[in-house]
Image (cartoon, rainbow, N blue to C red; front, side, top):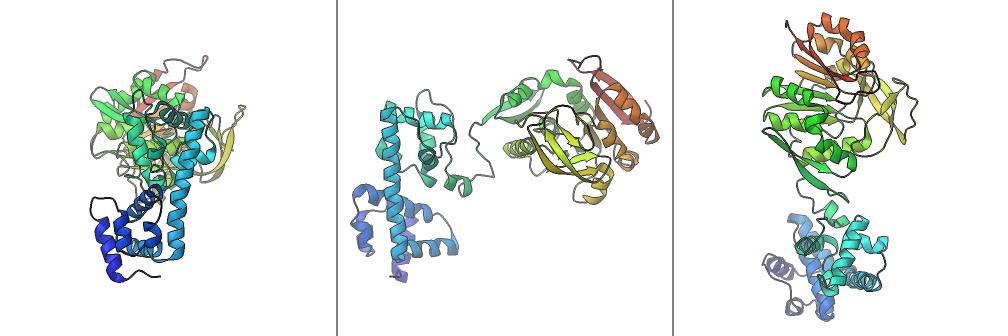
Length: 420
């Protein structure tokens, strides 16, 4: 029962108008099965058709031809409408009974976390949302659910995201996690957004001015437009983001082998629209090129004190160990011709700083690199001083961390190329 061309064109024209498809439309187009549906099912079918009509070109035509011009397509539309009504009724029952939503119920409305599920149930229980309204808020219609709950009194600012919204309705590549709270970080005249999904990330946001003030000062004093920072051990990207927000024509190359932190780094780049000025690599740097096993001591966003074996021994247990690529910086710079060589190098890798420096001999001696900051103990830095001396670097200053670890005086050591 293929649709006649004139009928298809009439449907396409109707979808371009800002109005809901009515029973009279279905009758006029000869879609008697849809015209004869109960009103609630017919309204949902009209919404599903309108959603498919958002697409452009051949996809739009092919999809609507199948949905409205075949028995299987009509069966699909009617089945989806009835399923939405059933899901809404099930969630409404849960609200009346005071029970938790099942995973299937949560899936239908994009309730990514238990907080989302509780907020949805509470909205129904309070009357802020009705069962009838909920039926149109599945699939792509989840935006209506988000708008309604954000407007509700004392609402929790959660974003509900169905699989349709996640795969199709994405805006500028932004990803919504189950708990995702943006905070604006301000330090002097610099500001940027940091996405918060864990207590560790919140701690990093709150202590940016006190944890490593010398790193911020180093960037403010030495970074100029046109420079390129290599952030080795970028974590969730705090100093990458600071550098990009500080100077509008700076680029950054970030290295973060921890899987969850690499993800969070990319989320933060997207949140600030910095993705065009930063290239992030999920690799570890050392003094060799090959493969290693990366150990995450805590698999939590913003976590640190990780290590890569066999380059580093550690007596701490790890929650998860993943395979990772390992590069020395010289091999990386030689092979990654699509990124600029560094003018600034920040190394914070929880214990193998000297290996990273030894793997960067040619880069250190090259013409572009002018500034270097290394976090580590004085003994670690002393092991690489001969190499830095030969490359023309001088120690500008060393600072102790606000809270030292035992008597090891963990701190940051700032070098620059040229005479004092």
